Length: 489
Image (cartoon, rainbow, N blue to C red; front, side):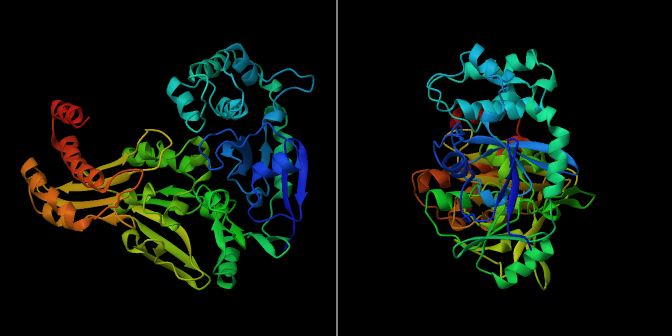
């Protein structure tokens, strides 16, 4: 065992032997290191003013991602390279090309959000030499600005892509070989335990060590991406102790596609999963594009979205509709169960003391399978669902429903199947008459609540309308779909 969290901050080696398990990276940067370019705007991963880059080794390659420092815990940073806005300009004060483009295009007004925008654009600059307008807007989903109207910032991204200078100017390109070597030296299979008073954070070296830890610490809080747990600290002021960090475990970060289906490790982030899911199940890929901003997708994990059991988590309805299973692991072995059986009640899942979510498996749909998922929110990007519905359909050669699974989030205390609706559809012709008759069955399946996101009546009516929309999208003409969409709008 070791007793230090070690990482690189810009160009400096950091070793911390006394860290509170819930200390955020933003507080560490601003209060301890006086790196005040990163700002606290929302403290919940929404505004992007705190955006920094975190680099890590993936299969021997150095990969940088934008993250929200306000909800990223210091304990999760072992063997990483943290890059702040202060690291971009040259030592003589010459601005980085991304920074200069923001100046040239008047992309900054009050300036509070500017460092976060610069880091998001820098992250894009590192990964996409010729980004499309859509790619630029996607990279900026997690950054909010009250002044500019965004157009000058988008123009800055386009300018820096057009006149991309030599990579030798860029600090991360110049230092890449050195940083890789230094990060290799920081990687360890030993378990790290760091204390501050009676408070502890633990970084297990392997999944086996994690399972053994949970056997002895069943009440410990497991943190992967912290996009949910971070808010427990910054908004709810929860006292978490001890905290076990797992975002570094390669064993949990594999996503594989085979003839039987897709297996997703519990540590796979939304960003990592996107390529495979968008290729294999396009509707699922489009859903991921609407989860948070890029920073949240880089940090958050599908396994964490399942494990926390939130009734408004975005991925469980889609996974349930796709007949996914979840594999749980403990020190004594593993067990696998249907995902819809995992959710028992609000805040309660079928996870025994000492168990962790290890992986999810999505069976490969049969030929002709139809699938859709709809996320309903007040704003399109970076918003929490009022409700989220997923539909999986199979028809026989006569157009009769031979397979149907429907699941919703935001309609009950857990992600939940619409079993009465399914029963009303199964074995019936896939027609408007069948759908009209089945709509009333939603009243047996769900009794949603009213809250600030939506009223109960709105949720119930929208769920019914989404079933009608799914019918139109799977059997109706484009003209019928357009008429329906316009009427509902």
